[in-house]
Each structure stands twice: as C-alpha cells, then as structure tokens.
Length: 387
Image 1 (cartoon, rainbow, N blue to C red):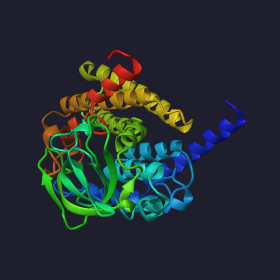
Image 2 (cartoon, rainbow, N blue to C red):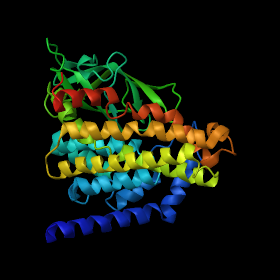
Image 3 (tube, helix red, strand yellow):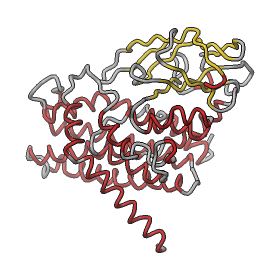
C-alpha cells in the first residue's frame, strides 16, 4: 500500500470512528429510543437524527459542499450507510432521498434542480420518494403506463403507482412516466419531479404485513413543466438502467443482516443455546457468510470509488447479502421459541419485538433495490452469458 493509500485508509477509519461514536452517543440513542417506542402502526418519517447527521454533512458526505455534502467520496457515503444500519437507524427515507433521488439529481439533474432540492435533502429538512412501480408493471418498468400528455410548454401526468414507501411524508417524488409510444417499450419514458402535495395527487395506504406502510398513489392531471424533467425527454429508461446499478452495493443489506445476527447470537447466549450443537454451527456458518457478503459489498464500493462500476458485481452483492437475512431470521426464531412471535404491541416481547418485526419484513429484502430473480438474471446474462 502506498503512503497516499495508507493515509486515505487512516482518514476513512477516523471518519468511521467519528460517525460510530455519534450514533452510539446520547443524542442519537435518545432519538432511536423514541423511534423504538412507536406503536407498530406509527411509522417514523423525517427523523431528528437525519437533521443531526445533516448538520455534520454526514447525511450525504459524497455530495459537493455547495449541495450540502462534504465533497468526499462514495467510500465515506458507504461508511455512513453501514454504520447507520448497524446502529438500527431506519433507512428508508435516507435511501430514497439521498441514495436514489439525490443521486439522480446529481448525475442527471439540471443545476437549478440541484440547487433547489439537494441542500435541503442533505440537511434532512426535506425528503423525497420514488414512484416507479405500477399495478401492472413491477420489475418490468418498460411496461409502465403512467403517461405525460403534452400541455402547452409542459405536460399533464396521469397514472397510478403502487408499493412505494414514505410518499405520504415526502415533499416531492421522482416519477417515471411515458412521454411517447413506440414499438420498443424501453423508449419514450421520462423522469419527472412531482410535488407530492399538488392538487391531483391522491395517496392511500396499501395493506401489508410490515410495520411501515406501502402506498397507492393516483396522479390525475398534475401539470409539470420543462423545469420538472430530470435528464432528457424519452431517455428515462437508460438513466434508470445506468443509475440504479449504483444503488446496489449490498452495504445496507449486509448491515441489516449483521445487526440481526448479532441480536440472535446475544439471545442464544442469554438463553443457554449458544453452545447447543443444533445452533452453534449454523450461527458460525451465518457469520462466515456475512463476512463474505461484507467483502463483496466493499468490492462493489471500491469499484464505484475507482469509477469502474460493475453491474454484475453489484447484482451479486445485492443478491448474496439480501439472501442471508432469511436464514438469520429462521434460526433466530428457533432460538427464541414462542417469545419470538411477540410483537412490539406486547410489553414482554424480547428486544421490543425486533425479531418479530423483521420476520414480517423479511420477504421485502428480496424485493427492494431489485428482486433476487432480477439480480440472478443480470448475473446470468451480463456475467455468465447464459441467456
């Protein structure tokens, strides 16, 4: 390792320690305790903790200083993401606002859009959501039917989006809509910034088994202008295809799996099952898998830091890390026994029902940021040339 590389690594270690110390400190713990005390039907949205991170420039450390960041790199951003998930900070708003919408604006937005939206997102003062999925178009975005009809020098949006999260709290959303028809479904999609509180936007909950709700969003004739277009008209598919790959590092999924495994190991020790052959070997194997998942995730981050994004490695990392969460939850439920099914509604639930809540959430990890099946398809086609 060169002296420059060694200095950079030491700086990153110092940065990680500062973030970790803050997240373990009294201010952060008070905020997280308040979130944990919510009833299951009271989901958190814009957290005081986000504003605390934003004040330090840590919410989006890789963004330029002019937009509220620290001008650092994707490595420091990955450090923040990893430490947040390990500390149990709810990350949906962060992922949506910073990692997806903010990233799109940085890479494809206009200077006016960046200056209007990014500083407030980086400070944790505003939030954004994503409106891609539709009732008849889930992973297949080329089949989306939300349309943007020409209206003078702008458009009017009509359509229905579903299974989006946190839109009821968002200030604006990144919306994919069809601006032209053609023989190829991938062509003619455009990305827009939609003010969520606009007349003509209707949001209602979609029932699910997890604590945080999904939403159904109906967009009925909301007028947008050229200033609301992100990137180039009709070229949204290629923007999505390129930029969403940068979202997938596996860092967040590994952090969630590691936090759960640490909880399971602690509960195994407390209940006398840590040395039970029925569990100890499985726990050791899961620990090894998570160590491998972290290595793969950080390989992906290093690729991004070197400006060599690799879609195959990204897909492998996201798939492998997210697939470890279910076996962690399974062994955790076996170790916990009947107490594992007690939710936060029950005052006697171990660890405030954390295991039970994550068990219900478990299937979502295979869907978020690209389904496991889509990741395997990308690996098979782009990596192995099988299809």
